[in-house]
Length: 195
Ligand code: SF4
Ligand code: SF4
Image (tube, rainbow, N blue to C red; front, side):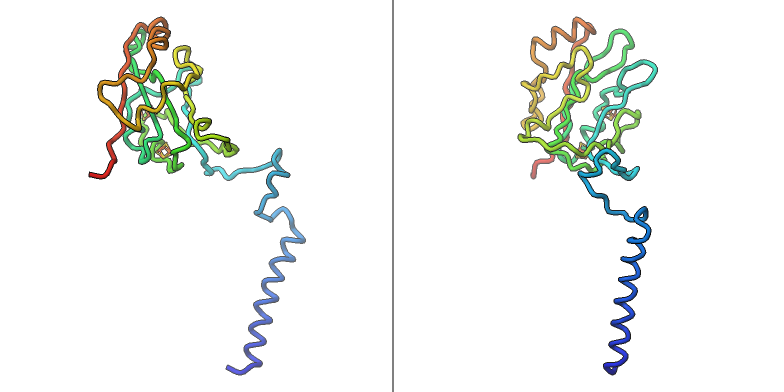
């Protein structure tokens, strides 16, 4: 290939790239890149963006849809969900006593949401979640349930699962039993330690 043809091809590539640049310059609404954080108030996230998980509430009853089946706990590849449950004497159904989300371990893979058959879990786009300490990333997702509290002092049983261990403190047991009159059970994650 002679030098003339090579130069022509190079020029064609250059003009095509510059055409694209000037096209975006003339029509800024077509630009995909967003100037974050300057545009924080007008930021548009794609519909399918996902940043962390959250529990879903039933709009009519105001209760979480979660029936504490533990499918999400077992589906999670990184033991990021810790769950204790109790039987609600009113509805005779299981409910989460404490649904603990370890965001510091979460891979944002969405497997827990896929595993949930009860429309109880979703991925949210909430991405401004930076914290100074991994402990600050641990959250009780049902903390507005009257028995759950936002006390994280007894969290962390999943790293060393013990079948006989209860995750709720005696004080919180008393509180929950006052609300529900029920006893709790702990759902353990799958053991993924190397054999
Ligand atoms: S998104 Fe993935 S890593 Fe995070 S809690 Fe769900 S299953 Fe676990
Ligand atoms: S799979 Fe759904 S219903 Fe079952 S414990 Fe998880 S969030 Fe609750």
